[in-house]
Length: 414
Image (spheres, one colour):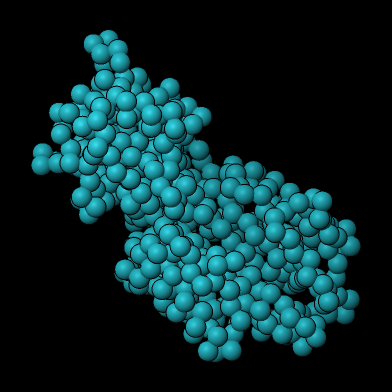
């Protein structure tokens, strides 16, 4: 394990952001026929998309920050209508000394461009793409006037495309992130972190958070630790000290854990088994159950194809799994700037017949994914069922999905 070098991380992040702004935004605007895209943020009321476009040293927007993308006959421009320079990523486009009114400065730019459409952050399906506050929306409409306001459209396709699209320069970052998270997860599922009869699920959750902090990163959600044992499934919906259980010999431990490394998130789930007195290996039935869950991963990833919707991939994978006698549940999602990223949703745990809106979005590449799912199996040694819940991060490009740092193929013995 290594500690994240924040200064180097900022340098790398700024270089990647500039490359993404150069490559991804013009391509998306051309694809969707948008010639003007406006993102507006105020400090502490951040547009989730704009936040991913700012320099690494900008911890938030400053006052009102307006980012403008123009994609027209004269080429592509990106402008910042803001009091402070955006560190070279956007060209300064407002001089408060000559035009004190920031909204008037924005309107001057738009009228000069005379766009066919003006895309802004509104969306029914994706919170990531719905970042314009009511106040900013009202002031924008008032400033534009009826003629320009009539050209406003949703920027959902642009926002989702920006957040979901990865570039090659990000793959090494993603690989580092997954490796670091895996190392913490492996230590968590060992005697270093677990003492039978003493450690509680809440203890282990806080251990995970503390170890992430040691390497200079944060978690993007509170880790979830749960246990299954013969005759009892002690899982909960979310981590809570109020439902903490003491881990005992013979327990199957499940961990859901994700960190933010550099600018990318991870999301991983693995299992460990606490050996009972006299045991030296994990019971065969549990590893066989894991192997069946690995089969579901393979079936799902084989269905990935650009242009297919998340719902199409979901239903095809479920059908093939059930045909093989498996009992799968699939709830896979994109990952990137956000743990639950914008893009095609491939099932939700409580929506296995397809997901309206987000599930209808088509797969695109390159993109990054959390292959998240569950398979239910009968385990002879337990005389009952076990739910194997897996999640591993993968990269989708050139029609191929592959795990960036491997996957769990055997349950860790503790």
